Length: 345
Image (cartoon, rainbow, N blue to C red; front, side):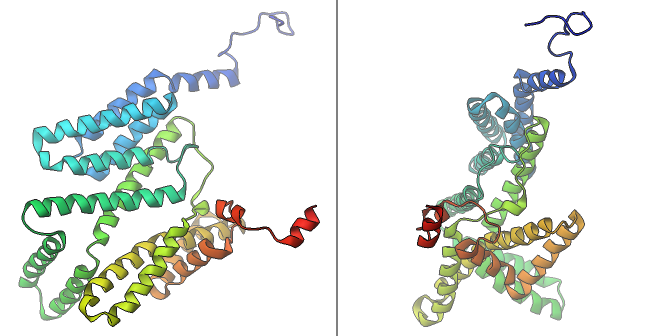
């Protein structure tokens, strides 16, 4: 190898060249200092768990995301540190919060890779959010059982207390609206767990994305590539069927309708994102700017609330259409068209 440049002078050591210097700086940023900085953010997030789990998820996911640069082993170690630190804080302040902070740490760990090439698929994220919501509901159900009651009874009792306190200072018109709100709350209270899971996932997504930007490891994936799994479409159909059949089951009408409505609403969330991703993909393909794409999402939300249109588009895209031509394993598993096979042969 030639150790001199064209002008006869010695070649500058690696790291003094412009491009190599950037790589060297990146390697330094992704070294042990990133792990130490990640642990600082993890400990800060653990200290904030009892103040606000959502905000703590941002910090913990950011810290775990920084440790991603040193491999999966460092990421698992960071997750264990987050759990231990959060549990220690709960033991000192409020031990009953231990299950909730552990769920928060788990959420932060799952979504800490967002924004990088290690980001999980949309199907895995949907499954993770559903599992987190069930874990939250299960935790509350255990606490309700320990208090000699059940989760539905505890939730209905909380709704009645809220309605009684709010109705004391409300006018006649407000009381009618409050009655309608209470009726909806008694049907859709399970969605509160899904909403909390989504919020924690979004906060963890923010932390993971910031960590990926810090590590210069951002992925090119965008929201327009969101692709819900097939089982979401199955849940949508099951929810519709249960809602329609509930009137034919007098003994279980209320329970079946409640389950059907909540399953349908949960599936609609994912299918709405699917339909909105399709709309975003088309606007992006047409060359529209971010403002137009944002207005498209606003219009999609209005159409979903008013006409259920966006969820239907998402359902068709998941089940059959694949408007964006995304690579799907289930598409590869389908038998090929004989005409296409002959032409390719």
